[in-house]
Structures are given as structure tokens and as C-alpha cells.
Length: 209
Image 1 (cartoon, rainbow, N blue to C red):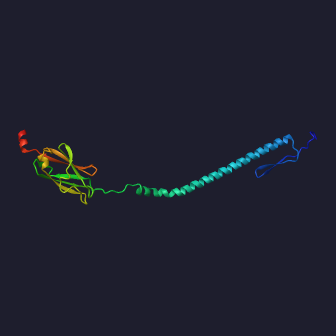
Image 2: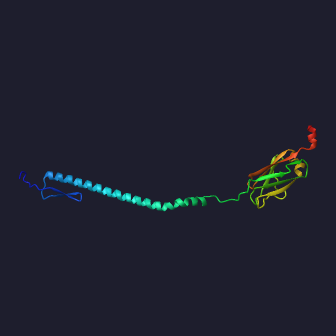
């Protein structure tokens, strides 16, 4: 033969989509190149097949994980409103039947000693201890200890106390003018207001005339 080498038959058969090469003991240079090309093609197809299988497995695993998470989270969609309505809501407090109000009767009195006024209120919390602030001598003063009974509301949130105004006029701690009485709670927050007016004495009124 030309180069002294026996040329062997190189053949290719299709085996499940793969290539198979049959060689005898001796190969030529051309046969080696053909074998290398076939091997590279087989490797490329095998790698593509492996990647495809891996992607399908990852996709299936991801779908399974999300499916299980959905099964676990689905009940929370229905429980969330109940949880918000119970555990996240502030506790119910005693609410007055109406806004707190206070009145003074009579609202206008003579500027004289031992005059009496009745201070009444409603719409407060039941059994609530209250304070009564009025400006006397140029400073706010709590007169809740001067009225009788002490302003503590009943079960309905109401109270009524009488103030006998004597020493306050004698010492001229209150002037013959209008004064605001404020109802406050234990934290000194104003809950309601009313106005008490002391009429000017007739002598002073005649002098101005």
C-alpha cells in the first residue's frame, strides 16, 4: 500500500442519538481528526442533555418548594383579619355616654360673702375623682377641697357639688368679674369649662353712673 500502513474502515452508527466509532489497531491522521470531531460532537450533545435534565430538576424542585409555601401561607390570608382585630387592637376603655360637660347654677351671683353656687357635671367616667380650677389671687387654685361633696362621679359619670364663697370674697381673692372654672382629671387635663360671673356691687355701679 502507498504509505505502508493499512487503512482501516472508520464507521459511524446512530446509537440512541450518540455516535460510536469502530477502529482497528492502526489509524491514519485523517481518521484521528474525524474521531476527534465525532468525540467533540458527542460531548457537546451529552453536555446539552445533562444541562437540560438539570434545569428541569431545578424547575421541578422550585415549583415544589413554592407549592409547599403556598399551602402553609394560604390559611394566614383568612386568619390575618382576625388576628388584627383581636391582638393588635387596643383594649376597650370605659367611654362616657357623652362629652363631659359642666354647669354652674346660678351662673351670675352677687359679689357678697357666703354666696352659694352649685357646680354640676355629666359625661365623665364612672367613679372618677375630679379637680376644679379657678384663678384666685392671680394664680390657678383647686377648689375641689372647698366644695361639698368632693367632686367624684357616680356610676353614671355625674357629680354635683356646692361651693359656699366666703373667705375668697372677704380677702378679695376673686374680683367682681367673670371667672372660668375648669374641671380637670388626676393628670391635670382639662375636661370641661364653665363661667361664673360675680356682679359688681350696686355702690360701684352707681359711682360709675
